[in-house]
Length: 104
Image (cartoon, rainbow, N blue to C red; front, top):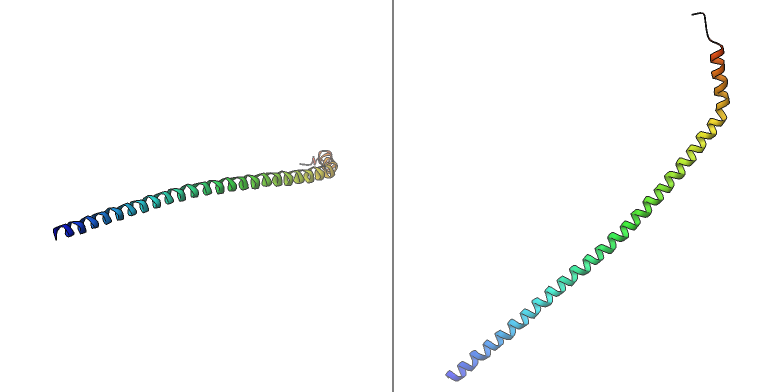
């Protein structure tokens, strides 16, 4: 009985060793998958950040162009009004200087 008992224990030990090896392999595989997932996620985040930075740059560029265009239009309107009103302003200034009330 001792030989068969020893053989059974030996078989159990081998099965336990094999199971430990399988568990260790599973852990290593899980760690590799997690590391790969982290690497992939970091790469995806970087791509998204770069795309968003380009989008922001484009929006800022468009806003700058729009602001400059709006400013140029307003300056043109102000200059046009100045050209229209300057002779009237000169006349009013000359009238004010000529018609000084000296009765005071």
